[in-house]
Length: 115
Length: 116
Image (cartoon, rainbow over all chains, first blue to last red; front, side, top):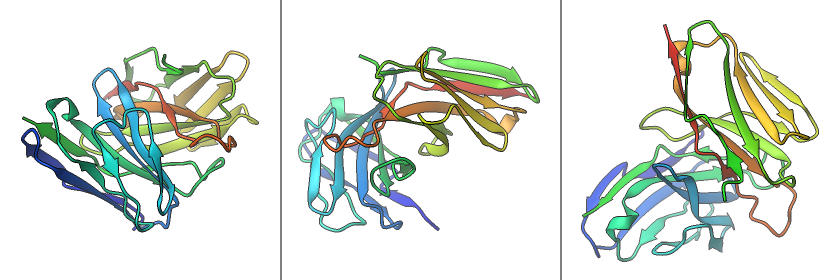
């Protein structure tokens, strides 16, 4: 089954404790992206990756890191989480660029609380 | 600056009737538009899309209409079913811009409730 898998689904942590949210897709997609969703602000892009070893900042990259060492995985790293990073996070992937290829498929989400 | 706007945060319709969800955009360079549906505790799922070369696209009970001159698109669901109750997001992109990451620009969503 084609899917985007995020782990963990729920996470409660404390300020400053490094954490990683994993994302894996089995569709051989080139493009992957991380979003956060906050009330009244919608979906905002954090980082994206056009292909292996190619990553770039989205709209709200501060406090986050990503890596793309292999095509299927795109982990989101919070080196020193802060309470303002409490949010609902989504990973997404798509075939690539151009119409239809840009249809993004989403993981189920990770709800993060930073105390 | 919200480039994609869904001005109705919520909508309630009766089962069997038509649901019309609206979306406006400001960037005339957008050339591909998508609708996503999101249930609680799940990620958004792709519903239907339309290219700017068309003004209508249909898939079963779902039809998307695009009015480029008005920079407006709408999603029609006919007939509406209780299982359609979800948040619907409109998204837009510039699909052929080589200098852009072709990211999707999202609206804030409309929560649809279909009452039995």
